[in-house]
Length: 83
Image (cartoon, rainbow, N blue to C red):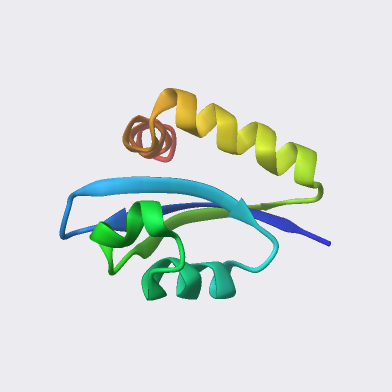
């Protein structure tokens, strides 16, 4: 089964959130329904980036890398590479 690493963005608080899951649609519903208490102040969250990986270990490794770099910087790095 594939695992998705994702970055969400909240326009209301101008913040990013990075996570990983096996079911992105369900996870986004959880975030936007307030089930994830630590990020309820950012509702609504929208997916701005995602990628799928074949294992949970790889997904967690990438999630950690993004969190260490910062989601905004990670996305800016991707933009530079994609030009």
